Length: 184
Image 1 (tube, helix red, strand yellow):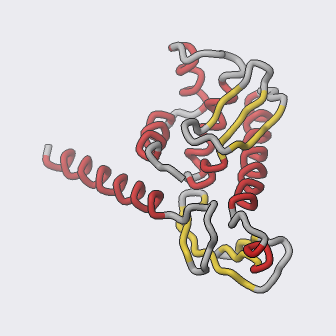
Image 2: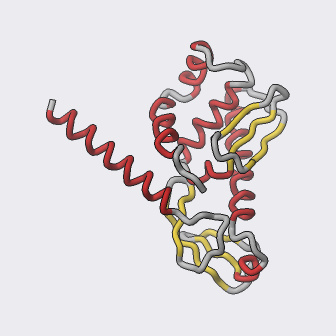
């Protein structure tokens, strides 16, 4: 019994640490002063301002942002949004091929209250903020939204489909709920 309590306490502590990291991550809309940290695919990375470069935002163990892009304004938000669209599109295409889904379009938005959504016309939408989550959590959100192409509600039948696509979905939902208070 003690092992279960210790394990549960360790998970809660780890979860709280992860949430604090996200809350302390760089607010991507603001001006970056260099050597700040932010989350990307569940890991914390340093962002360095460097001489002008193409593309403006590069990753090689750390992120670098060309100073001219920084001076144009907008911080790295538009660049991270581009990365988010690329990642979400790749994941949607992968799982659509694997499971026979046929989404009409993939979009990335700035939603603050939803990680993703699916329209009645087959467009799947994701907030760019989702790129801060670990890849397995992103995959869960992608699979959740793709499941809505077949079942348009959150009925028990829907959740059975989600579970068949992503057996660990409850763990990923819990992670997302803990990060839901994140305001960027």
